[in-house]
Length: 478
Image (cartoon, rainbow, N blue to C red):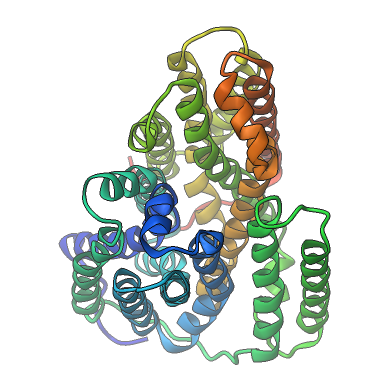
């Protein structure tokens, strides 16, 4: 570590702003293209390859997340996050200039390779700069950025595609990325740099990339490109299972595995990862399928349905902010998220019971906002609990591992919720919903969606309740 003094309050705010921009880039591009996909297909052609512009990014971003954490522990945070931002910006320019669907998919891979570590690296850098007791407040800001970006993405994508040009989805990353680059580079030079002697298990990394990449590919293709029980999907899942088994074997035998067993053996880490994975997975799955309900039941267009998600975003941001601030003041800091998740699970059950009752969208959104409030309240507590439980040498690896499993859970939840909402992508069921809005197809499908949401939130509650509530290091705020 360098001898640089820790940042003062003004410098810390500047660092936070730069890191928030970096996180905004990664989170926004996971969802912003969804509502613009029809316009992109009409312009570039090859509509059969359209899913690749989403799948390519998700695969690349997911598989490199654990590597970013390890590299940050070895080579330092500033160098690694700058490489990530530069790679992401270059990929964005390539996306905006793509002349074909294949070129766009390839450019999205570059984007994903850059964006995959930005979220976990931002969380790790904050953990370097502030004590665990203070982290909840700052992690709540990042949770707010992530959730806002995830929900604002579809609305922005629809507006850009409808009123201007779809390439603006990617051009907007250029000024944002350059601003993040300048701020992060200049401000992180003045703060302590943490490096720890580690060896990178490249064989384990290759196995993890294969296992997670194939799993994300199967989740993206299943029910959309191929039936779930088709030979391609079954084969991809089998290959993924084999790669995961080999990764587990390698992890148990490597001198220094990619995800150290000393981290995975901590029950608090396992419980926090499971709680946040189920909670965030439920949120992402909900945010993806709710526009379908709004467009069919409410007769909205893509941009309007995206804007209707704003109450859900507000609920999540409010939950994260309140819970994060309370962490610095309360000994029993799990109380707020436990109450929030309990209310959220009941609200999701209430939403399921509402289907077919004739009540307005206002009441449905009110219930779902309660659910997202609970999910938001859980996120900073889970993240800080993991960081508080591990040694400083493992901070980057542990934070990246949590983000990695969250992303896998989000991919699985999107596949599950989409299968429940529109029959796994079966076009005939979607057409049936459009022509029979008051019939049973829409309401029975979304009743299952909200029941699945209740299960996700309930499991998040269960694992958070089981998680050890360790005292947070640092002075308590009054």
